[in-house]
Length: 422
Image 1: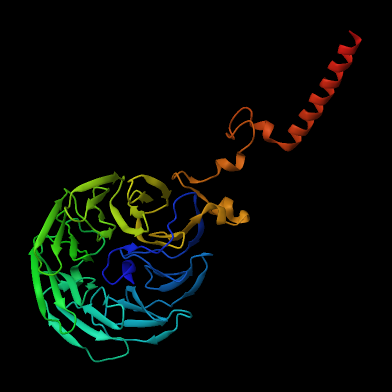
Image 2 (image 1 turned 135 degrees about the vertical axis):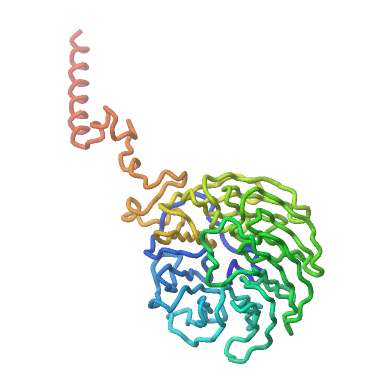
């Protein structure tokens, strides 16, 4: 499911985090455009491309298992339903793919819009461009209910028989740009709906709302926006619990794990906040806008920045465990199973432990975990010098070393003979 669970927390508590000694296991020629994280389950990553394709990548080997033909419009994998992958395009089309083969099992109609909530069983919740939220079931063409909201909805979070959906008002769907805005003057609203009948339980509003969906955890709804604020609401009543303010826009939803809320903004800052009080626990500064993640695996946070770097940060310690430098801005992430999947405008990377990279591929694939890029200098590593331009670099030549050894041996024999004569 998007961000690992129906509540959109961005937390994978049972995954194995990649903590260090990072290298490129594979690079897939599949550039990504939207800021939607990849799906990951059972050793397979399900990705989307800026050519409107959906693909499956084996995270152990980095091999592409299947890739669809170009679809009618931008399409995002949304959640798993048994052996099927459910995806939604921004036009009328929906797709249910066989997860093993990539064949299309059915094509439900979700309507124009973006994001698709899921209750973890069989029900889906689709915000539409006409300002409604529609609920349905996989395998049925008849909607369960439809609720008018008056604004364009984003990816819903589903928790405890409630559907939480953020909407943008006074904005046309065709003019809504998901990649570039730094702030929006449109009003935003957050709704809590009863999942059984679509009735509105509560709603709140805020100005200059952004384009990010909420996350729900332990009775609290967390909502970021382009006003630079992260606001927490009581999930039952909608009462504001706290508000954390920054001077730059948030363009990714927060991740919530172990009493901590993590969010990155366009100032390049990754914040860790106490989930109950909203107090800042710590922060990490990057050199670009944070537009990938955050996602949390066990006790490690992964974020991607416009400084072309993925950051792995200890959730409790705040220590930067490693950095990985790509060649382009980062727009999608997922992590688990000792892997980190990175989507950029130039392609997708599968990162894994350097020790698991085949020796014959290491020179072309591996990237230094300190962000220095391909480890060309390591190919010149020797006993006397690691610098290929050093005046001693000629001693790295095997022939030179052989003749030098012979010379040293002869000199030793001569010195011994002279010593005996004296």
